[in-house]
Length: 312
Image (cartoon, rainbow, N blue to C red; front, side, top):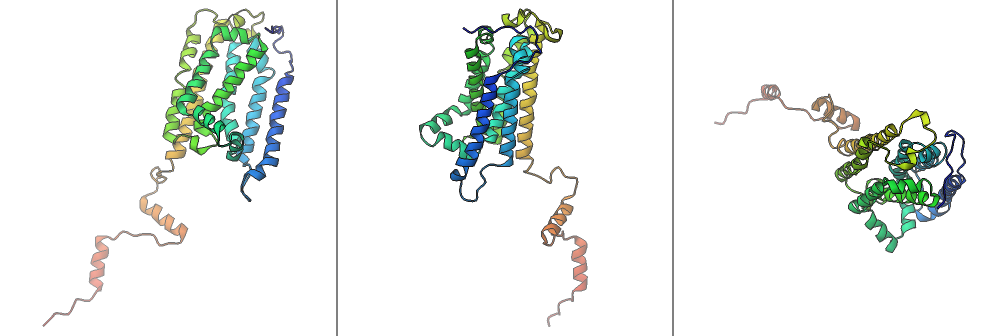
């Protein structure tokens, strides 16, 4: 076991060399893959990477760096469990979907191929399997014994974070994964994300109603950052997990709803009348708008026409 030395000054800068090297490696690997492998993996003239891919990758690296280095890392691991909860949400809720959105379809197909590795990824990305794995890891990561040990054991600490990120990537795969055959339909995505917000209610409620310190590591720190008590810290962690995570998931569900079903009837929510909309559409494409034949139009047409000659 590797014991961590408690920081007497929460705001004293602490370098995390391993995180710097990891982020630098990921950036270098991404650039190399896009420049060297991408042009060979796509059809001639096809775009290797989109602007959305690039910006999502930048956002993912920024979140990874911020969550894993000073001050969030040090305060979250040694002083406040609420900050530790923010760190876990950044690594499981915010970063993984950006990583998947940053990955072009050709890149993931190059990585997994079409053989056994692909079959394993496809199986683990099934909504039920991925949901159970991710939520199971969320529950394990809140067990007092795991938390108290991981905060003072470096290898276990990084293993917990690694498994959390990997299961989170699988959980987000049916929603924003680069492989279309592994994605769910919009309605399924909304139900799936709604269910993802149900399981965290258990540990969140447990933290919110606990009458004493749940985690020994955070209950016996020599310094209370910002003067936050142990109980207040636990309650804030529960609220961050339930309310913060819930709002985030609901925002995505609302976005999916309007993106998918808002295009079904673009004129239903318009204040313009249907005939005005048809006229505008006809003027836009150069065609003649359809007109409605009224009773007055028919009467006027009969008055202008000659009566048929009477037969003898």
